[in-house]
Length: 398
Image (cartoon, rainbow, N blue to C red; front, side):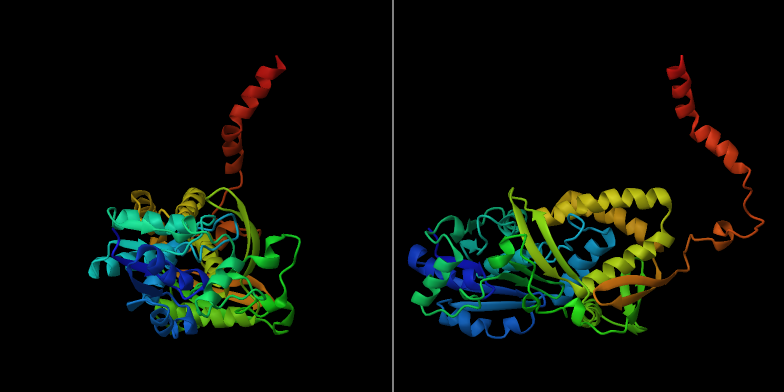
């Protein structure tokens, strides 16, 4: 029998109606738990709203710095991008939120935890895998897999019937997820990939056509793969990201429109706004081009694909992810230097790179005369490197 439930509470449509639904269907006490990962003003009214909706207690944890330093930056250093576009903004927030949920559930002596993820989405997997890894005996309640509500419109009607205000209306029915790293949009007219996103959709980024007519330049300093300074200012992880978010958004940088392959088997169209993250990924990968040798760089690209799948699939708390972090940390020992980025009407391009560990040797690479490279050496190398092809061709000629 469930007597007390800790609910992962965001104040959105789904979790808003779950509080009365749990009380009606389980007859239990509900504790609302929110993790602040940089949602901004969205968290301000949550306590009042949760308690008014029937929760007995409300907890909110300030997780912003931890989110950026312990979840965002390790993924950045790995170079992990899902399906070439998605910078994993929702994905790596979920394990941290689940961990905080479990902490409060244990602290308050809860019998179960509950989340508002739909049965069609990836987040149900991410939350529940984290919970299983951290509290294997804890019962998990997923209302979307139990109740009779079958659509967002029905959920809106349920909220209205229980006098619960929600941020989603039938006129503005987008499903959104926000944190300091990104803002995602799904649903409504976006469900047809033929429909171009309207400018009114963007709540963070300036539409590129409306961005300034002059480029903005920003310099980012990295130490062992971790961004530590912007334009000469040493900032905490979250403040550094916030600084880049502001600059990137003003220049229309960071909009990604994609159809992705969900873990649960279907394709989904989403529009993501990730201004600061886009700048950091481009800058970091550019710095690696002069700091990593060829074979390490190529192998790290393979690791990045696997790392992205792990994060996207919600397998954060796993031995493999920890092992990959160890590999990535070794590769980042010399990824120290400064990258100058040019931001202009949605584009983000490198304007300069320098590092004390740079492997780029201008004297070696120059087209001018040099005294360090004997071009005749290439002949023997090509003969040996091409020997298998030559032997095969001779065999075929017989």
